[in-house]
Image (cartoon, rainbow, N blue to C red; front, side, top):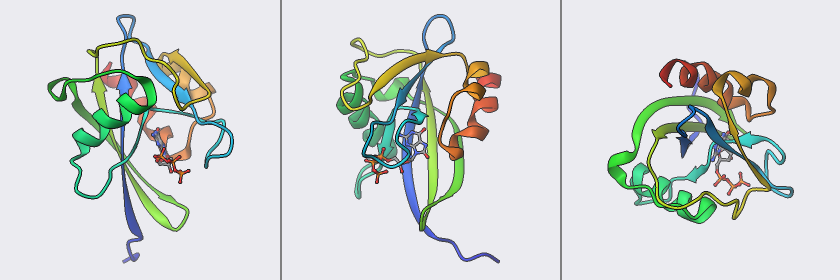
Length: 136
Ligand SMILES: Nc1nc2c([nH]c(=O)n2[C@H]2C[C@H](O)[C@@H](COP(=O)(O)OP(=O)(O)OP(=O)(O)O)O2)c(=O)[nH]1
């Protein structure tokens, strides 16, 4: 059996608009995976629930507020990431307050899942595209 690497829990959101498009953000220069298009979110801090972490990240990154009841667990990804092992929990949300602004990302873009195949995304996100397409 392969020895498990240190698990890195990350939460992310597929914000879905009325046309079934999903908000992606571009990781800025100077960070790991720079230039790639990702789902907004980030690392779960020690002592934080996944949902609280996601609500915090969405405020910090996009200046939007999402009620916990509007976060629907949807899919996950499991992939090696450097010397750790990423466990990415993806939630779907269709309701939030505020207009998303790129406070940390270099750009935002609304994309249909079928069109995500043509965008550079982190390798862990690839299996999530088909799952999202089936769910939306
Ligand atoms: N938010 C988000 N992170 C993702 C996705 N796919 C993926 O591999 N990741 C990785 C990138 C990061 O290593 C980690 C998210 O943590 P973070 O966004 O808070 O990371 P960070 O830039 O602050 O820190 P670092 O990676 O530069 O060390 O998960 C995704 O779709 N959304």
